[in-house]
Image 1 (cartoon, helix red, strand yellow):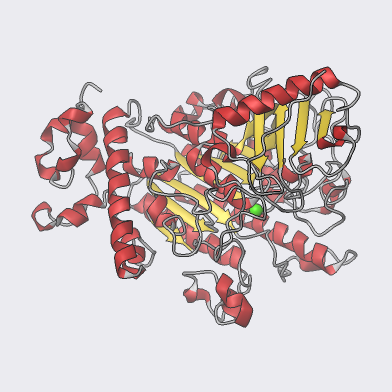
Image 2 (cartoon, rainbow, N blue to C red):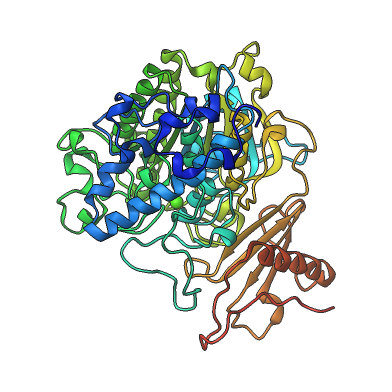
Length: 585
Ligand SMILES: [Ca+2]
C-alpha cells in the first residue's frame, strides 16, 4: 500500500483522466503503460479500456458491445465500465506483490466433458497413493498428458461440478455452484431451470456483479486470452461474451456449449441447417479447409500467446477446448487407431487424442518462445466423462468409477487435473518459489474453484474480497504430505439431468448424497452414504446401516448449503423450496 495510495486517494471518478493520477504512483503507471495512442488523443471511453494493446483480428470488448441492440449495448457498456472501475480500484490499490521483475504466465487448459479415466495417464491410486493402471488407461492414447504428468503433479481426487457452466463459472469466480447459483448448464435460448428447479437460479451466468479471475489479472497487467468454449451466459447476455468477463482476447467463445461441427469443411456448423445455431464464432478464416476445430483453435491460441510475448506482456491463457463434447465427429487424424470399438466410442477416443496433440503443440510452442520455464500449466476436465460407453449410473464409461457426466456418482464429477511448469528447471527463480515434484501424485482433495485463489497467490495479485470457496493449492502442488486433507466438497444440483435434484457432500473419506424428490416408501433410499476409502466405487449404500454417520454428514451438508446461500428445488406442488432432511437417530 505504501506507494500506491488508498482508494480514497485515487477516486474512481478520476480514472478516466489518468494523466492526473500522479499520486497513485508506480502501480497506476504499470496499469497504463500499454495504452498506445498519445495521451492527449485519448477519449474518456478509450482510457477506460486499460491494458488492451490487442491485435485487431481478435474480438475485443468494443467489437462485441457494438454488436448489441442499441439500448442493450448502452447498458452493457455501462455495466462493463462500472465493473472495470470497481475491480481496478481494488487491484490497483491493494495488490501487494504482483510487480516482481518476472511474473509467471498461466495457462489453464480445460477439456470439455473429459473425465478422470479418459486418458492413458493413471489417476486411480492404491491405498498408499501409488497410481494403478486400469483397462481404460490402456485404451486411450494421451502421450502429451503423460509428458505433462511426468513434469509435474497430478490429482487423484480432483472435483468439478457435474456439468459445464457451473464448473466454468466456478473457475472464473472461485465459488462453488451452490454459491454462484449457476447450478445447471446454460441453455442459450431459454431458461432451463427444470420443472422444479429454483426459478431465480443464475441462468444468466456471469454478470457485472461478479469478480472474475481474468478481470483481476487483466487489471494487474496480464494479457488475458480466451480460446474455445465460453458458455458463461445465454444468448445476448452479458456473460455470453468472454470480453465482458475480463478477457482481452476472445477466440471462438460465446454462449454455445457445443460446436455445430468440428470440421472446417463444414464451416464448424455455420450455415448448416439445424447446426447453425451452434456454429463456432470467429473461425471464418478456416472455413472450407480440411482442418479439425481442435487444431484450428490450437493454432490461434499459439498466435495470441506469441503476440503477448512479442508485446512483453505476462499472459493468462484459458484454452477451453470444445473437444471432447458431443457431437462425436471422428477426428480423421486419429480415428483409425480405434478399429475394434463402436463408431461413437472410436470418435470420442479420436477427440481425446486430438486434444492431447494440442497440449503437446502448446507445450512445444511455449518452449520455442522461450517462456516455458516461467509458465505454469494447469490441465483439467470440466465434469465427468461423457464417453458413449455404457449406462449412466453403472460402472461403465469411467470404470472403475461409477457413473458419468451429470450423475451424482464419482464418475460424474471426478476429473483429471495435472499442474506442471511447462519446462521444469529447478534453478529458475519462479520455480524455486513453487517447486513442483516430477511425476508426483496428490491424493488430497482439490476442486475447480481452487484455481482462482491458487493463481492469485502465484501471481501475487490480491483480488477484491468477495466470498470464495477455493484454497491456494500451492502446498499440494509442492507435494506436501497432509496438505488439504479432510477438506469438504459440495456439489449442488437442484435441476433435472441424468441425475435430478440432488446434493453431494464429501468430507474426508465420507460421501453423502441427498435426493430431494424421493418417490420410494423406503426412506433410506433418499440417502446414499459411502466410505470412499473402503468402497471407492460406491457399491454399498451405508445409509441404513450407519445412521449416526449419516446424520453427521447430513448436518454438515445442510450447514455447507446454508453457508453458501444455496437455492433449493421446489416441492411437487411448486409451493415451497425443499431443504435436505436430516434424519434422526
Ligand atoms: Ca462439460
